[in-house]
Image (cartoon, rainbow, N blue to C red):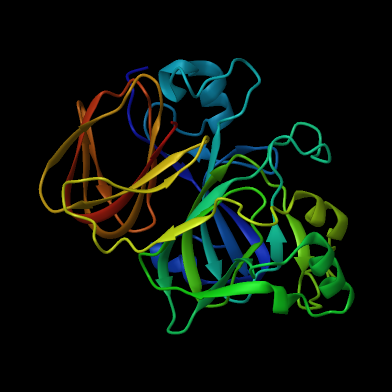
Length: 321
């Protein structure tokens, strides 16, 4: 196969807190409250299929198994039967998400075969006054948090942050967090679907039953003190230069503003993922081009080599460290 940028048919996930905002990206949504669009996924709970080109219709798992390092790179391919390292989502928060925390890779309670979950958010849009929950108040210990949960006053222990478009949040495993109503984000994360809920506003799930909480697991994995979480405004990004907005052992995420043709290249060590945040343009490579529009996500094979971005657009670039 001659390498080319891979675009996938997203998998849409109903969530009790979801809405219909992902339609603004031209995405086809099934009925119901859609909270998550899995844009690039290779997980037992959702695998996206290539849309277009020679590999049209192949699942990302099949692409991984068939082409290995040619697509994933020397750092990304861990051998037959391994998973793609990352999971790329768009999230529509029409209502508040549960207060939650994710485990690290070393947590003994992880489901068999599952990974920990370190992630980052880039805010694509936010209604005036929209906020997120981001970490614990200073001085909150395991004992204090457990008591607050018991007394139904967990919200007293949490930090709230008002957000706006362009904000970036790094959320290492162990960080207590929650997106709240009125926020639309792009999420780059470890390839995991493990979430422990601390609090869910006494809400019923889509099945009409109370949603499960995971208090003991949550307390076990929460990083009391400094989890390593960081946040930043990104309005200082300069056209034609990458601004690093998240760095972890699992991914690096950068923001780029395109105003003229920008020659770039992949590395044989890692695939590159591009997520289009706003504006329009083109992605060009030896042998083809593709239009860029908000919400688009592309997987550039490690052996693609030279490519270019053109037009007036803002993109996120993710790759393995």
